[in-house]
Amino acid sequence: MKSPMFFLIAAMLATPLTTLAADSHDHGTTKPHKVELNAGKKWATDAPLRQAMTAIRTSTTAILPSAHAGKAVAENYDAFGKTVAGQVTYIVQNCKLDAKADAQLHLLIGDMMAGAAIAEGKQPEQQRASGVVKVAQALNSYGKHFDHGGWQSIKLPH
Image (cartoon, rainbow, N blue to C red):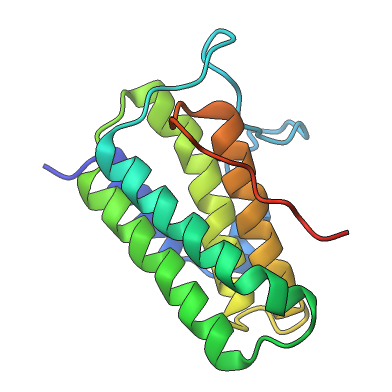
């Protein structure tokens, strides 16, 4: 049986990002969804999640300096986006979190997938480098909200 996260990611990949930008889960409120701690503590993780997030972090820290300097090329951004999408697919297929942690993770995955799409040039009105920054910001939020031993935040350019 596929996890609820699988269906969310499948829907996200099939939905244009312009649709995702409008909060379809708003239910009439204007309050944005944001990742929260678990009663003041970080959410538990599992090995597949930690493995995939580490891979996404490695890819992000590899491209970030050249993206910030304006030296990354389309091929770099495309490879980055594919890496993020591939690791998210791995998370969907292998990660087993409790429902509340999973719901929090969905928020971060949505940001990472949006960032990957921007990096791949699928949002031509946005600079590709901004997609890398969006993924880095989601990774930093992951580190603040999920228990991943040894996790280090990514220093973002100013």
